[in-house]
Amino acid sequence: MRYLPIHIDLRDKIVIIVGGGPAAEAKLRTLIKTEAQLVVLSESPSAEILRWADEGRIEIAVDEAFETATLIYAATESPAENLAIAEQARALGIPVNAADQPAGCDFITPALVDRSPVAISIGTEGTSPGLARALKSDLESRLPSDLGDTARRIKGLRDALKQDEPDIAKRQALWAKVLGSGLGDYASLDSDAVTARYTAARETSEATDDKAGYVHIVGAGPGDPDLLTVGALRVMHSADVVIYDRLVSEEVLSLCRREAEYIYVGKIPGGVSTRQEEINRIMVEKADSGATVVRLKSGDPLVFGRAEEEFAALDSAGIDFTIHPGITAATAAAASLRHSLTVRGENTAATLATGHDENGFAELDWTALAKPDARATIYMGLRAARFIQGRLLLHGADSATPVAVVENASRPDEIILSTTIGGLPDDLAAHGIKGPAVVMIGYDVRRKSAALKAAS
View 1 (tube, helix red, strand yellow):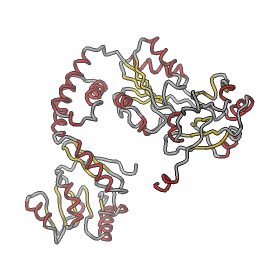
View 2 (tube, helix red, strand yellow):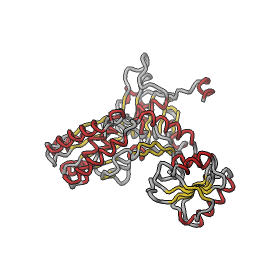
View 3 (cartoon, helix red, strand yellow):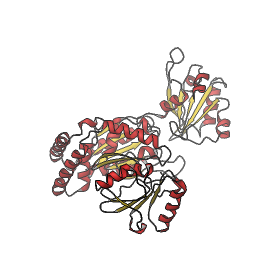
View 4 (cartoon, helix red, strand yellow):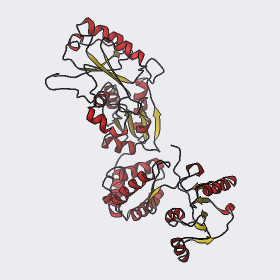
């Protein structure tokens, strides 16, 4: 992210707009909604700008000292002149925006959805103003026109809650319950509906033991935030504590409640790792203090996630929990291959296996996996690749059996390697596959058809 979105208080601040034509008008259509003192520097302002001046919304001048301004907009119809103005402003240390000149911009003005005091800014860092406008149009059509009234009602409720509840964490948790779900139906965000939810949440909170913490064990999926469930997103937003693994992507982690306490408990194969007993202790300790804990585990916590050990620890401590399944790497990888895990008439089972366990390389049912119709996805199988190859060939597998290896399934840096049992370890080394990856025995990559390639 190159540009950090910041909302600047412009009440009674001077903003200078240099220019009097279409470019200046475009800037002013947003600026006149603020409480700034707008000064337009132009010898020949347009009729629209003159009208705004007649209404007292802006001031037109021929000269104004840049030093008086909080922000400056270079919005003439000349790109060269705009860049020259930008250089003057920068020499004075005043942030400047030069119309249609990214090199002359210290800041950009995003597309704005205005439901004051609610303001939603949409920026594309100058790459696609048209896309920003399209997103703005979509949100404009879905957000209720009286959303500002709801925000003002919430402010009144917040002020009252501060008087009754000094603990900021408890206040945030309550608002997460009120506003953390159901927002897909924006039409329900009217003042009365929010007030009713607030009242119910307060009554529930007062009737609940303050020390009754809770744990949500959440599958973060393979990395693509689009693969999260709605339920996972809801509890991630309401967390007091987020305990997360090494393979949870930054994109997924960023969707958790910003004010939560974040605790990293990563495990590095063959490296420094957080012991499972320590993870269990942290979960129990945080929940026992009354916190809502989200244990964020990559993939599906129920597939090679050591979740059963965490369940046992929570049961032993008398702490209640809910499991939110996630998309496992095998499913995401199969989707990337454009291949079903099970195909009628080809395989009657699909095995999910681990390449190694606490005793070393895992011993599997190699006789079954070596059969021509066998299909298996092996997690944590890269270091065991030569061992897997040897065991399969020893038990009669055809060395030409297709194998697909998917590294970082569903992520932008995903890599798909198409190989065979005979070529598996050497191809892994040749292509620099280091993981996280799944090794998919009996699966090949479905190539796009010529028609699809042409269309793309």
